[in-house]
Length: 136
Image 1 (tube, rainbow, N blue to C red):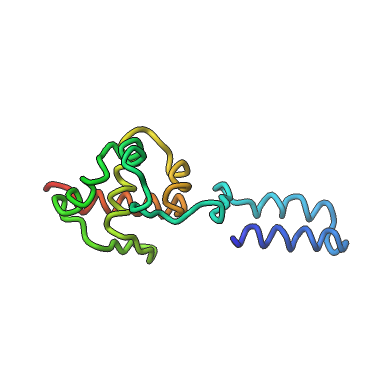
Image 2: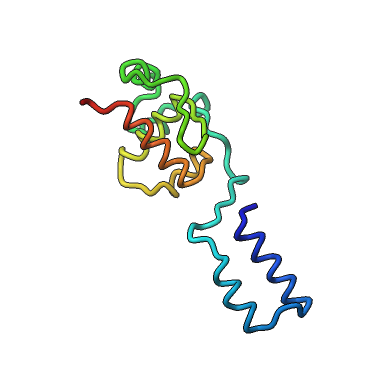
């Protein structure tokens, strides 16, 4: 559970028990609101390229499923990415995140359902994968 949600629940309980007034409750409740939407990650499955069919892979990533391992090798994608916030991502998943993000316009929040990762983590993975493959 995120910290903002916990604070809001505590404030609500305090208000219900008459420990704080209307004048105290309203600004505090507004103050402890997350700027990012709260996604329900339990509704989705963890990313697994093995369970994707060829048509789905082609539609989402604009690449044939059989070509994904070849792309990993050709682009020298490491087996694992370690992001700055200590998140770990499999190399193939990282490539798929980048392919999905660049295959057609989509927001990181649109990708949560496929990769079961937060917006900030998807952003970090995309940056990590793309920075590893820059031509200098």
